[in-house]
Image (tube, rainbow, N blue to C red):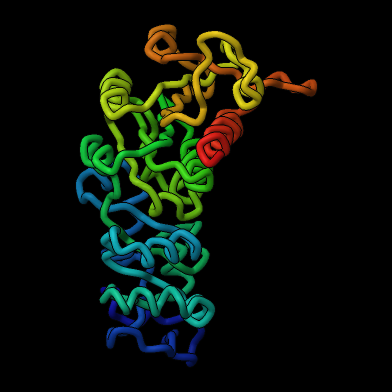
Length: 298
């Protein structure tokens, strides 16, 4: 059965299940086992994303941001009838950009993604080259070095966006930023600022330095206290938070390797004023990025 065919709902005499809102002059999708549904669902895997150059955008917030971002190519938006009525701004933005909008049953959207919330989209991968991203002259950059947890990666991207960062870099061996959990955790911020993936930390640091950024590594045992830097009492050799800065954040479990720390201009710790043993990666990144954002605005 194709995705254009109607599937019986299993109740004798009740006829086919229909969605009554016509969209883009195509019949609604009713078969959760259709080829197109399987192709969309497959984008949850890295191999399918690399093969197709596309990824899955799940949920109304992420899809809303994707269709609003003219720099992102969106191939299609899929909605349930209820979502179509609930999110007219998504449908309107998609149509303004000539993005196909398709309706499907609740079962079809669930087969595409269990986290769809009635709305999914398919878009081209959004990463850019490091050289291209640096042409804009960024002043605040987040670098994720071998960060493996997709939720952390997406949350750091969201924090970087909120702090006004200009760029996020994920080095080799980091999680795929197009992983569905990363995309959801970014809450749409993936579409707001450039993202570079797959470069070595050595390459990233060298390029950032060439473009005038200082390199600060975040670590719980860093020489410099972040509060002291903000207050201007950190002493000799302290970095200037108001200067263009790239923050390097390490792996969730083991932090930054000695060689990675040595590549930085300074290693900075976030002070712990309570009894907590440490901060998780995303929280520490948010604190550091906001500290730089505050200093740069001042």
